[in-house]
Length: 363
Image 1 (cartoon, rainbow, N blue to C red):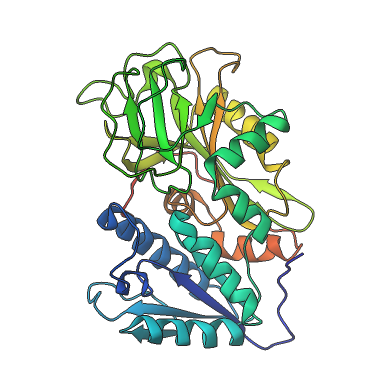
Image 2 (cartoon, one colour; image 1 turned 60 degrees about the vertical axis):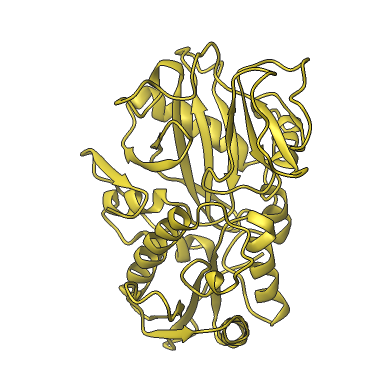
């Protein structure tokens, strides 16, 4: 089990690697659908976490930076510019081996998150994040749904389904198709009925999932109303996890457009919804193998007041964009809390009650 501890008076060295700003886009074959939106979220998360870690006493932060991204310079002690894939990998290996802890922020797409985390471990580094078994599980939407269902956590009914064939006629619609390894709403498709057009993607593996909660007539509210409150409330609950405890943070709403693109979120939720969200997310986090560090649970809170149609949508075994709003609401340094709790040390947290809205790019 990972832990965090300051060795005497020596500074703790943290290697913070964010894939989209740290050289991931140097690979022309990078399998990312909407690079612009993922990069905006990655840049916002990296910038915020680097600043918070650097503001913590006794912490020295190192980041990689794609030399082509002239508009982004994270606030940290050391920034290493990389210009090629080979240079990125070489600098990554050295930084991971030298750091006391490495934090990886990367999409699950095509195994990127798992690959980078395994690389840290293979180079003798120490990963401040979920276990590799958790990362592998969360990187497969179908496997995650089956795991949660077996643990008694409500999830939308769904089946594994590769693109490249007609939609099944014996499935309930409307539905959502999602790639098994998607991240940031990448590749999601709204399927009205079995006669809906099939996207021209050759045999891409995915999960066909009942759109929850029902009843509903569209994935989101009509134009001008980005949140689909009439059919449920998309929300997320983040946890700071250590060896013996997972501390839940205030639930956040999620804003999605008509194509399921993530626009940002807000907090706090009204108390009744916040209580339901936390209760459901806690049941999910308890079922996961060795959650350490920051873990996010996405869910939809249904229209019934007793929460009978609340469902968990997915698990994010890494920093999520909700960190942007949570750090603004937190009276303490949220990054310092993450380090302390991951090391098994208590860290008191308190949050402002005023309303906070945040965009996916950190505003």
